[in-house]
Amino acid sequence: MTSATSLLFFAIHLACISTGNSSESFVKLECKTEYHGVYGQQLILGCIVKPVVVDVTIITVTWKRMGAAAKADANLLEYHKEKRELTPGFTFAEPSWNKKNMNVSLLLTNTKMADKGEYECMVTTDVGIATATISLSVTAMYKSPTMSSSPENCIKQNTGVTIFCNSTGGHQKGLIWWFDEFGTNCTGSAELVAKKTDDTLFSLSSKLTVLKATYSGSTNYSCTVHNTNGVQEGKASFEIPFVCSAGSKDDFASDSTTQWLAPVGVIGSLVIGLLAALLIFKRRSVQRARRQSTFPLMSHSGHPTDRHHDDEAEGNAILTV
Ligand SMILES: *[C@@H]1O[C@H](CO)[C@@H](O)[C@H](O)[C@H]1NC(C)=O
Ligand SMILES: *[C@@H]1O[C@H](CO)[C@@H](O)[C@H](O)[C@H]1NC(C)=O
Ligand SMILES: *[C@@H]1O[C@H](CO)[C@@H](O)[C@H](O)[C@H]1NC(C)=O
Ligand SMILES: *[C@@H]1O[C@H](CO)[C@@H](O)[C@H](O)[C@H]1NC(C)=O
Image 1 (spheres, protein in one colour):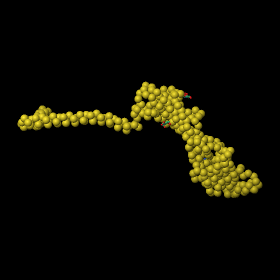
Image 2 (image 1 turned 45 degrees about the horizontal axis):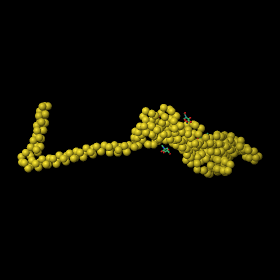
Image 3 (image 1 turned 90 degrees about the vertical axis):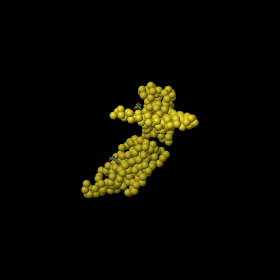
Image 4 (image 1 turned 30 degrees about the vertical axis):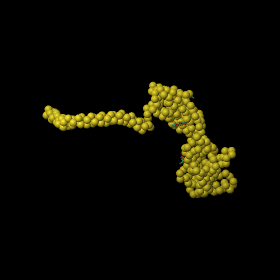
């Protein structure tokens, strides 16, 4: 567009203002009217300024959350004459937004339950003003459940075990269902406790008691977590730890070494005892021999037997050659 036409539009714009007519027809703000946010996640409330003319400059942008009955409106983002004021957690969605950027979308960096409500975006440009409203609902989903058992491991056959299935993060009281490895619904035998972790979120803990755990029965149990409408939001499964798991490896190792060391110790002391007995016996026989004569001692000294062994070795060598 030429500068002449822009000038013309500018002239019309001025004329409109002077005649008191709304200049809103020269600029429109297009926003999606409904958003569904998720607790703890980022969310962009998208709004684009659609000017009828080109080369529009934005003068002010205001994003506010409209106050519910008692509460006052909260200004979340204000851009006015090159200056911006931001509330922590809210910013322009465009990282390097400037007054020529028609994308005035709002970014919620960490959506909270309290962020739900009506939002208003107002933009003033050099060719007119536009406003739009958006409604935001926020939900919180349960996280994938974590499972554990009591006792933790080394469960013996035909003994009882309690399995836990825990999940947090839902914004309404949820449900936990249980299934054994054959697909049987065992929810009826489980006990669910729901607690509020803070003002808005819930934690669920369900325990299923297996009275007699056996290898031939179900050894693998699954649990599913559902929101208040019954929609599944997570699933986990758990194998009954009959064996001592890797987690207790250290205990197991030290246990096995002590089990190992015990017989070694017994055998060791037996060997030492025997040696001692042999030594005493030998000393006594030596003393007895000395008393009789010094000569027979020579035959006891082992030399003759050594000789015998050597001869045998030589004989073998000759035989094999
Ligand atoms: C506006 O900017 C945001 C953030 O960069 C982007 O996600 C969104 O798609 C943009 N909207 C349009 C219509 O370009
Ligand atoms: C689940 O919750 C129960 C009861 O609060 C607790 O004893 C158990 O350790 C928890 N298990 C996990 C895996 O968090
Ligand atoms: C499992 O049992 C629970 C409680 O008895 C029930 O509400 C649920 O619908 C059952 N789920 C399935 C898949 O059968
Ligand atoms: C337990 O069962 C689930 C499905 O119900 C399966 O995905 C999982 O692999 C099984 N775990 C083991 C260790 O077999």
